[in-house]
Length: 346
Image (cartoon, rainbow, N blue to C red; front, side, top):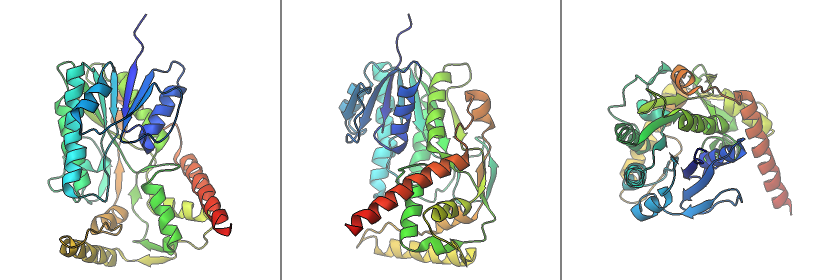
């Protein structure tokens, strides 16, 4: 009888990591599942162990990797941190994980990268994995994710098989980035405004599809010619960027949404001003703006990707259509909003 697979989900307490854990445990023949994260965020009796630890701590990572057959690394700092923190966590933390996998004889490492490792705001149509890394990244997060991805892929071999997945625009119920940002913007009254003319296409990916892609990567990595590769993951449904916020805003009860259009040129100018102010004030006060020149470029340029490689090599196909993912996400935020209003009323 084959030995039961034993998975370690690093960052398994977070938005994506938790969904990977849940899908693994829902499978017909679930593997052992362990979690390594900074803090325990949920209880699930089917999880073998929820280990609280830091990925920059070699002792904690080595102990967590001991006996595992698959490590899925989803942990990262995303925004709002000083530059050295990004490099310590996103890059050095990844190196610590690779070293632990080798030391503990883990045969499989799946890394969660970003679709932006090759993107710095340019107009990107039908991008593929052959596109080069950016020479100059427009933020430290993407720079460190690109550096960590290259480290992961160059570590393939010698008993350790690696894959890097590049999901685009992850969203879903309870995410703390994409849909939460839209919810927060709506509560501030920003449901009235859009930048540009909504003529550019953008790729979003529902969280369940991203989680499923990680599981498929782990299942297929030891086939000839699969390891050491990067794969874009999307919902395979490029959509006009502002259609997604409009859907969520409408479900939250706002009407005549996005009726005020800010020209792209003005948005870029304002974003540049914000960037300059952040740079000037950096020695005095740390500011993490949500409105930057880079974000204006993301919103107003095309960024959609070709996922033929993931389909052909990993057998990936989005199991949740974009519209259904949006519906589930809207239901979550509507319930959250209703609960907040009820709490205020009491």
